[in-house]
Length: 174
Ligand code: NI
Image: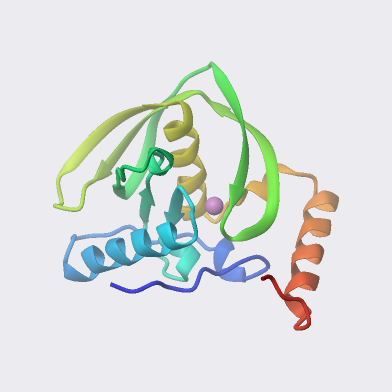
């Protein structure tokens, strides 16, 4: 297993559409393990393969890290089959957009079809944080980011700020 580098905006790869997996093999299993390791290392609760520069429709999530007991969930080719009319709002961050939190309204519950790590077709009805997190990650697979919910002006400002931050080699975090 290895920790991979997470790409950040304005990397153009984040805008690309990820390819479906045809067969779950050793490469996919290894990638899933690497994604978990990378996500835990960055204290994230979700990560899509595109965020480590790999355009495959694979997502990992663990929304239960705070209580100390890990509950890893992986989703291959996830797709949303049903959404609720009722919505909920979370303040969302993203490992590919440092220091940025945006309030986003999404369907409160959703039904997701996916393939698990053993290659079995599954169905899951999600609510609350899991529902929001899965919708956020599936957006990644379609090249959509949380900043795309903002106006172009606000989006450009955030990208400019992040680019500037990356360009200052003098800045240290200790
Ligand atoms: Ni994200």
